[in-house]
Image (cartoon, rainbow over the protein chains, first blue to last red):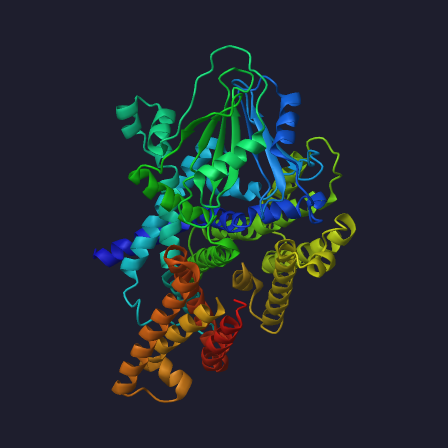
Length: 506
Length: 109
């Protein structure tokens, strides 16, 4: 067997087996580029422009009344993309308690999973450490598929611009798969590689086990050159103003940097430390240079030097993956390239199907079913989550869990539907139609449920971050409706058996 | 950004026309060897100009990444146009850089 032949088999199976998983990861990751905008969209009380925000001292008072004995308090001031305070505490040995506070009133906002849902879905599938390992395995197989794909695709330059949608089905999908794979290759390689690199300490522990006896925290502290102070078990004197410390931190940085995460460690202790991290989205590497103060006297305790060079490289790769730099342009382009990656996966499985339909074979039904369940089901479930967000009353206890349930219920229903032999010949058309209804309905629903943030109001205000979400929904709905109509037209005149037509669309 | 996108698109279109098959499809006959050399030169020049503008606007680090993203996306658009709307492929190569340049001159990019 020649190298190309063996690589072709590897490419087919390494690609196919994780296609649906990779679709989930890429789709959710693309949406997560705009996680903060989605979070704001999902919180109608954040839609009207905010006034003078709460001071850090007021947020600290809020934390003090709720968790005076916490191990640590955390807060993050409002920024241009996030016009709300984040605040939370870490109880001793307990789970982190996180809240969003209205920037002006300081009221905790109704619980909602927000855009974080998609962010978490894309790196651990909401399954914690095990999910991270599954995603890592998918990323490794993606790298394998990308590299073997380059080896088998011998006419990369001749076929660089070739796409023939009118050719036979197999040819057309092969063209599409090649074009999207080759043109997007730098992006795909970069995302798969840096995505793996982010959790390298979790995946490859040998170094930490040998050099640090498995103490990853000490490793982080050393390479980030951060600093901590132990508590001494004595009650704390009254603290100095946090806002004053923020001003002092800004003076220390001296480059116009603003405060990001602010933490108060062991706030009830005489050795309480206030640490202020710098927020920097102008460069790919955000080194979060932290300044630490004594909470009671305000004395400057430590200024974090720039990262260790090795860690700076790591932070650069992380930054490249996370797209927090460079403003909305970078995020918009990442979103489009991520969706192009989704299309590459779709064309890949379609090509697999087209090749095998002619000669028949095992697994055709399974692949078709998985296509309907994942490629159609996941976007529908995501839309259902947004619907649930708009429909659920804001005072509902456990509201965020109901949002997730709507997502899971819709996805499960899609899977069941894909498994049942119901209207199989027009499954994709039905899914597209449903997608169009759900997507076009959301901006309308917002007119009733989010009166200060629906499309008319946000456009009139020039609030593009908010209007963008609705505009993308409208565009998605329009594309779904068009495709569904087109599929209907293609199918209507052709008297071929419906069994074949199902795959035209799947 | 439109200027960078347009220049990238122009570069890729020139690159594409440098191949006999696409040249025939868009312009009716295969290109002469001089024309292929000219088109490849134009492709390199367009891509470099795009990179230069992007770095000038966004700085070296972010600018290079943005340029790469825009190059990939302009390629996808070009391929889609060639497949479904070949008549639009040539006018866009003139229109996008001109419109982008006008916007950049007006200071609104």
